[in-house]
Length: 143
Image (tube, rainbow, N blue to C red; front, top):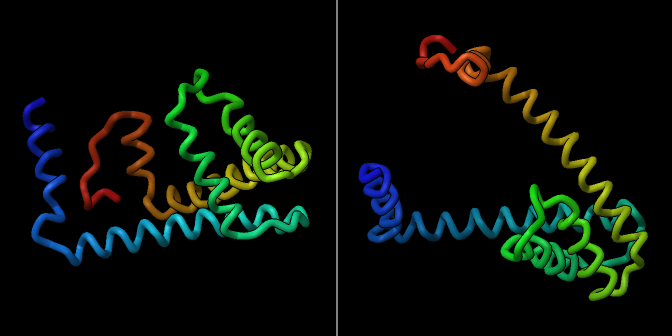
C-alpha cells in the first residue's frame, strides 16, 4: 500500500516544474470537452432539434456533474432522468425529444465502443485476450 501511495503522490507532482506539460494537459482536456460537446450537439442536429451548441455543451456538462449526486445501483436510469430534467424542464425541450435523443445516444455510443473495441483487440493481438481470460502474463515479444 505504501508503494502505491508513494507513486500516486509522485504523480501529483508531475506538473510542479513542467508548466508546458500542464498547459498541454489543460489544452487536451479542453479539446476532449469540446469533442464531447460536438458529439452531443450533433445528436440534437440528427433529430432536427434547433439547439445552440453552447447550451448543449452546458447541459451535457450538468449531466456529467450529476454523477456526484447519490445514484441508484449501476446508475440505472439516472442519466436519462437527468437528461429529461435538464433539457425538458430546464431548457424547454419536450420530454419525448429529450428521451429520444438520450436513447439514441446510448445506442450510438454502444455501436462506437463495439467498433473501436473490436479494432483495438484486432490490432493488439491475442495476447491481451489470453491475459484477460486466462490470467497469463504477456511480454512485448509475444504480441
